[in-house]
Amino acid sequence: MPFVEPILLWGALAVIIPVIIHFWHQKQGKPLPWAATQWLLEKQQQQSRGFRLDNVLLLIIRCLLLILLAVLLAQPLLNWLTKPPAVQKIHLVQPSSSVADNFKFELTEALKKGERVIWADDRLTKLDDKPYPFQNQARLDPLRLQTAINQVDAQHNVLHLYISPTEALADVPAITVPTHFQLHTLIDSTNQPRAYLSLKDNRKLFINKGGKLTSSSALDPSLKFQSEPVHSGPIRTLVQYKNEQERKTVTAALTALADVYGIEWVIDEKPTSNQAYTWQLTDHLPAKPSPQTLSIVSGNLQHTSLPNVIYTNDVLTPQTSERVETGQLPEWLGEQLLRYYGLKINSQPLGQQAIKSLFIPSTKPTRVQHASLQHALLLLFIVLVVVERWLALTKNA
Image 1 (spheres, rainbow, N blue to C red):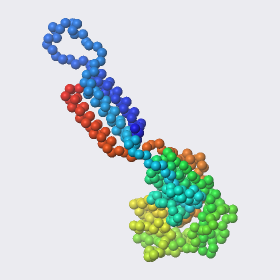
Image 2 (cartoon, one colour):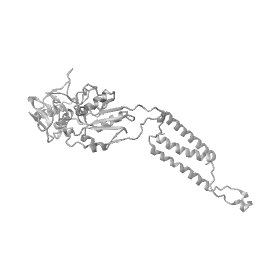
Image 3 (cartoon, rainbow, N blue to C red):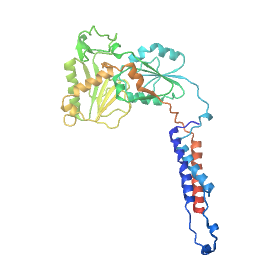
Image 4 (cartoon, helix red, strand yellow):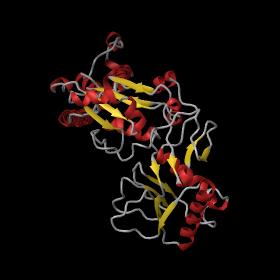
């Protein structure tokens, strides 16, 4: 019988404690007042030697209590009563266009075989012919990846994980995966074609070889870029704040980005019906935010786990935000935009050996408890406690 916490079964060794107490209790003599003691013969007054087992039933019940308590804490599973499910392959893919393109053949073959192919996001979205709304986001969140792995019922299946070796994985000590697990990673994310933006006057916005954001009329010929820009033309942005000063501060930061890099903005202060926005900067997130819009919400403590929503608890004014006071707001906003479009390149991707050592297979069984078994053992434990107390009080032992 398997257990969720088998190490706690060592607690059953505590059964030796009531046995030792029992013999120690029997070893100590109990004086009984008796007036006729002086008439006893000396040979009849000899002390009996050896250990005697008195109150055997009480001793057995106390030992059973300790053994049963250890079994309860170890949480037994009755997997032999259930039929094992059929082994299937589950393909979990990082929401990244470069990862999906690199393993396009493997994922297409898996779909043809009817295997489960899903994105590693909060909803475990199925991968199909429809374009993924965040496929340009190459950023990998280790915590979100671990959540997606935990949500996939892969204990009795084979999990295939497709990711890029980004530096973000170094932020966590380990990622737990099922026992049957296969890892597929890009060889080197720096060798993948880089994304870029097409701006006005036929200028290009990209990350150069030195890792700096560059706006130029031509792409760097020494680097490999994607065949098409991830975005062309002006970036339609919704700047909507209740605080007028905060709205002016954010608008000024966007103007600074436009002056330095030539980014063209089309800014609306109120949402227009049937208008899709690339970027939304606000202090109150709509009830149903658009999955195609990057939203930055300020002064909001109630976070939702959406991959296209970024939160900052600061109110973006010089009086309330250190980022604004020190002039770092344009740089920070530009950083979020680069990550959203996938322009940000990891200069030092993790090696294959470091990636493989990060994922640790878990041999712990699935925590599917059989309530009837647990309740029966708990009821038996309570009954034994009641019987033990009744015998102890009755026999004064």
